[in-house]
Amino acid sequence: MRRVLLGDMIAATQVLAAANRPHRPALAQRLIAQSDAAHRYMKRFGRAHPEWGIGTLETRARQMGPAPHIGFDLADLRILDALAVLAAALQARRSPAALPPRPPLCYGEHLEIGGKSMGNSKTKLASIDPVWDRVRAEAADMVQAEPLLGGLVHSSLLHHATMERALAYRFSLKLASGEMSEQILREIADEAYDADADLGAAARADLTAVFDRDPACLRFIQPMLFFKGYQAVQAYRVGHWLWRQGRRDMAYFVQMRVSEVFGVDIHPAARIGRGIMIDHAHSIVVGETAVVGDNVSMLHSVTLGGTGKEDGDRHPKIGNGVLIGAGAAILGNITIGPCSRVAAGSVVLADVPACKTVAGVPARIVGEAGCDQPSITMDQLVKGEI
Image (tube, rainbow, N blue to C red; front, side, top):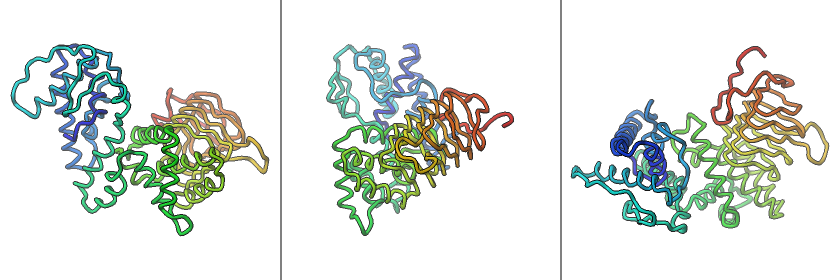
């Protein structure tokens, strides 16, 4: 089984905490065995196991129970007790010796995992970064599986202490040109990530969104290294930070280079939320006064544009949880309501209510959205006649 990260442990403990206490040891062993089998399956066939996922405890736990949260309350004795059960099960898997029963943890007691003590210290909890830990673990696996990529993986990921430093390196490497050196761009990105913690938080939310919604994404490492949609959005975020600092010309330079390198043209003044997934990300255009909410998914060739030469607020406002199909054009200062769907190839010229599906040229309402989170389910089929 892959190296167990804290994110895996947290996800698994949620499943264990929901089970009856006598059933927890057997359930923990089943989680471990199935994750191990899925990991061996993926190494052999190069794809996720059809039932048990990609071979991590987190993936298997998410299939069996509630979605994991990054972080947990140390005062929750049920979670701590379940965590102790899982830690004991992992230790038992490494050693055939029988373990004595572990009494329930008391509040304030420290739990030893991998030689590190976890108590009720807020400082220690603040340093937990399951997303970056998982990226680094997958990077180590990639180097072992494909040594020819070792230089790329080490320079881009393993060499860096934090995800923010890795993102700054990728930003500088991809956008450097004869007009602007890697060193200068690296300093700009480092300054941005140091000054605004929201940039790193948004990058983690975007990475999780791509992994959750794109069936071609089997590992967290893929968007950071290979997916231009994810990399373009992170570069836009640095450009948007520059815009907010009043450094407009440098922000325009970043916009130009993102457009040239990735084929994604997002004005640095546009406002884009977290949990964004742009699949394929070819020929994306987002105008200056556009606003995109959280947890939005869009496919290639989407345009969020204006309708002419008018000044002022002239671009669309996209609500949370909206799914925008390939080739859709949303034009003018209009609002797309939360959790709506815009069918592929549509031209939207008027407001769209929440939780509706629109299609056609010009687009009209053809039905309900079909679910409460279309941007997550990614169901793009329009059922019935249009």
